[in-house]
Length: 173
Image (cartoon, rainbow, N blue to C red; front, side):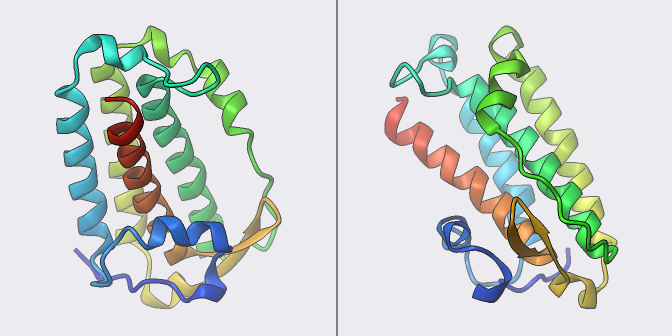
């Protein structure tokens, strides 16, 4: 896999730092994306079925909803990366993650289906990044009113997954 160095702080908004800090500073983000996915699959498959629909608070998502959210978020961010990589300067809208989750129907799906979808999305994300040139990684665009670079998006995707796994370990088990 290729190396994609961590983004500079002017390539993302401050809240993204909590995701980026979860990753090593080794430039091997494609490897980490692949490893994260394998870890996520193994970990979630080890959970008892009854925990997959648990909410630690009434307004919080279930584990199945989190898995669907990971797929949705990665799809949207990869699309943003594609647009920015192609020098598309059209400002992109945000998305309401709670609405997406509410209308996704994740709780009615099998965990394996949700994980297979996430795997398909991950393969597409890795394919996108493997086809981008080095000069493309620093290109920036605006989504949800925030500036972000192509490489910052890769780190966002990987760190976002790790953050949700940490939340599941801390609050759902």
